[in-house]
Image (cartoon, rainbow, N blue to C red):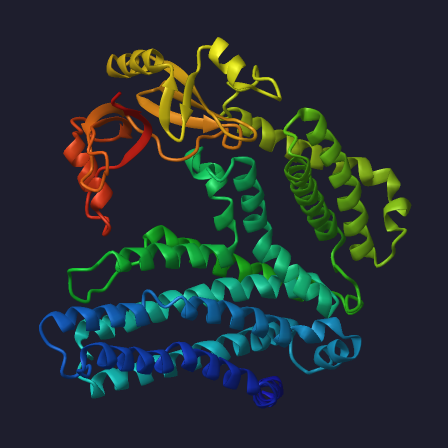
Length: 530
């Protein structure tokens, strides 16, 4: 009974001490919910001269779009909740970074596991309750303005549960970072590493793949979603993009993908379980240490050194515009040395730490080399190597000898027969390619159009993983536009996904400014009639 009384008193005192966190949460969420709702109502009245309550006819669609913008399309909600998750986690668990505070809390007549739950649940209550209050205020405002339908209430309930789960997933991972570290600055850095490591790795991989990573295997694309913060934002973007595309329908409840809900739930469950285990296993001597557990220190160091090495290797290639293996080897060596030195210095708080631990550094060097080798070898499976035979300084004369198509400002100068042959290969489903060289005042530009596996892909020396969308057809159409001063027909060679493309189709596509036409075109050559 005494223990229960002590626990109750401790909870009350902690709630009083940290109540200011709920004020910050309420103010932040008030700005992105009730205040945003007021702003949207004012904008509708300014645009149409009617209030939310008096909206009718086509204006109802605009009102529904405003309600979508307040709920599903309101990026401020997940951003604020993720920010609050980070702030609450670091502040509430900050006593683990101070020897005096830790001794005080550990000296309370309550069990360690109870201390964890008291600390953890404070952060949940101080964010979720203000969030609920703000949604209730929004519902009352909607009721007062005649738009509080069952559908809108269903939307508010749906976003409450999904965004609360998003908060819990990020908050739990931040709690893990705080339980792993013994200094406040390292709690912040640890949270940054756990939340930002895989998005950073994804961005580096995106650069290595020339921004076309999405076209090559789903495994690497999913790297980014191994962070709860990125997972929350990706899930939000998917739903908001769907709602943004609803331009003709009325307000409706939009469900998150079941995999997104399960993913966030997994981050929450695993995060809180790991945080509780680490919290209970922490010793009284943990405060003041950068990383509390030796095994965790080794694992984190391996991951960080690998990230530094991959990033600096990609940076060397970018800075020196040299995509050779030699440049990558130099970049990898620089990344290994820099990564090991920086990570050891931070983890040991000693600039000589990397020298003191020299006997084990080869293990981390091997991990880093393996990471760089695996990533670049994976990229080579999709990389276009057709330009390897082109000299560094390629001239128009050399291009003509090689049988390339020569163009100037998209107009064909030489090589029309090569284009016709390529068109014939595409028509017959035969693999083939043409190289196009564009004249210029400085360095000439060259492109390869490759037909393989039923699609035409364009490559240049800056985009060795394709320059964009792939097309199944290459069509030749003839005609002229109304604003053409010469009024003379021209022949247009067009990449498209429309099998029976005509010049009228091309003209309609050029005039379409609202994106209503479903087929795509890309004019690559123009031949004026002589």
